[in-house]
Length: 226
Image (cartoon, rainbow, N blue to C red):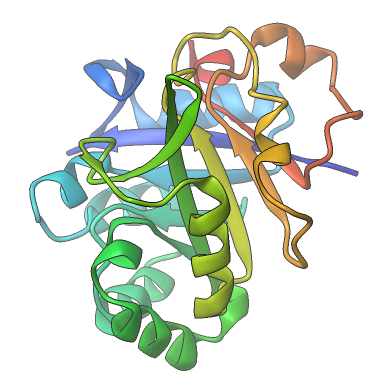
């Protein structure tokens, strides 16, 4: 059975949401978001502060601590995690796992050190992509920095680092409510770890669970909190 996840985007001490990783606006409080998650039978929280990687800032540990006090749901926490110390502090403050994206582009050695210290079961790798003139391109730094890798290459890289799960996010669909990119799973060969689809999840998909999708879980944002 697929997992129903809420992608909770944060900035400072509020919940925010943008469209295609742009035009981020405040949409509510942590407490209100948790109420929405409960009403929609959410099973996990994906808590991420995209501004931290973008501006090279430390992770938003205060937000993690606040959200962890409001819910017993497992939390995957990301945004600006660059060191083993960042990861270990995340766990102490309530995260079940940490999400790595930008650092995967910057230093495989650091990622391997984090995985070796925490265990692979605690590390989730990010694949954030756009499709441009028929070519899929992966990005870091909150969708600002393109890489030379497509989705298949990025997934292969993540597997080589030994992470336990992939969150596959369509930047083009983020915040649009137009539905998940069902074809994204076909951009790479079958892999031996779970894949979570994110970006564009609609209210229809939230209420009428698309069990036919070949994925371990779906991460909704706007459909849950707006």
